[in-house]
Image (tube, rainbow, N blue to C red; front, side, top):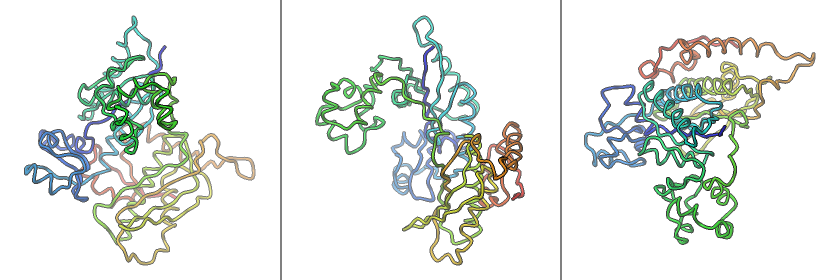
Length: 404
């Protein structure tokens, strides 16, 4: 058996989600980022007209007068992200969600008559399932470690699917050195002085010269790309020391109810994430951001939990002493740290574990195992923030009163 890493990356993810949701947008040039005045995501049609990511909206409209400009809808994007990961996880041994629009997958598939036909067939099945179910396109790269798989998926932006078995370095010719994962901006000029212009040049540079000119991380990168560093360890999400959920408001706000609703949404999301990792947390902080400063309000929960309503309760209590809002907040978030696995939950003074956690876990397991209602339940206090979900969600919503 051969261990493979599959990396998939959704193309122009935010814009693709908008086009998948609204069939009227398909084939039109679309950018997302209206509230920031910046093109955060650009559809293929907009790219073909010269619009690029990071371009100011006014400039994008000048280049492309017919441009459709939309505000960000992170609730929608997170929902697509969850569905994408859920589909992929059915095919593989382990999944590591690297960002909202990309995942690493671990699987063991044998060579078939010395070819990679089996792993190619598996990768294509995952790609087909995601694209047909969600109506978004993904690029897929397959290799023996994280770095090579991610580089293969870069090439797959044009080729759709790239499998790079051990010893194959030809696919690296199309990746400029500044686009190599792990090569920072400050390192690129030094690479260019050594005539290292792309990833292929990099892997063909003698290891002795790499050691002489660069730091240990660049040497490790060289070994990974050359498939000489062994199979990279699969970084499991459950090994994380902290988790967080943050987002900007659609417009700056002084309104306490809007801030509290946003924090309820973060608590709901982060609790679901913890339960997926089979982890629990006890310590956290609320994050509130103005244009000039970031404020943190620490909180501590009496016991380790992953229940969204309890996380929300203590998060909101941490900001109850804010009497006036003199400056509008532009963003909010919740961070939890000091995570432990569920099976290491501490006992009380009588040597027993708190059965409240188990009762909550049983309830959430019932919800999560029912595809008809999974992702459709929300805390009532997140209603304001979730308001857009009424028109943007893939599924109907049911609002639950909170239980403390």
